[in-house]
Amino acid sequence: MVILLVFGMGAMTLTVKLAEQEHQRLGIIAVAMRIGNQSDVVRMLINEKFESLQAEKTLVERRGGHPQHLLNGAPNLSERSSRKSALSEKLSAKAARRAL
Image (cartoon, rainbow, N blue to C red; front, side, top):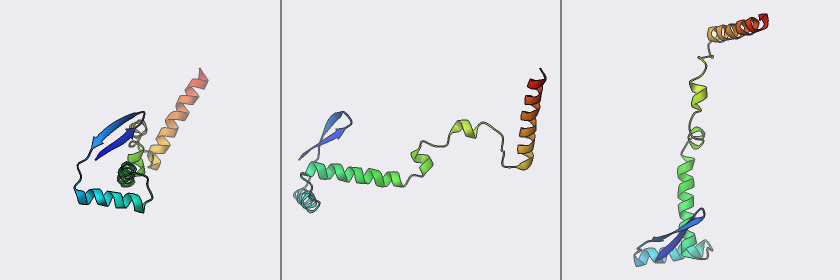
């Protein structure tokens, strides 16, 4: 059995050796799902498996991880003293620029 898989603009031919029973099962799946041919069944099963693997990832993992520029930037502003000193520094710098 030869299956044609399409990736983006190109195509890749994938040869899969199936036992007679597996070949029959694939045909039964195609008929039951009202899918035209066995290649489409294989494509659909690959997509379903890929989506289920993606569903196991968190939103952050699917989006490529935490933004490092935010994690490495400002100090921990969750504490009041840190926020107060950061705001004080910004206001002092702004006042110094205005005084020039």
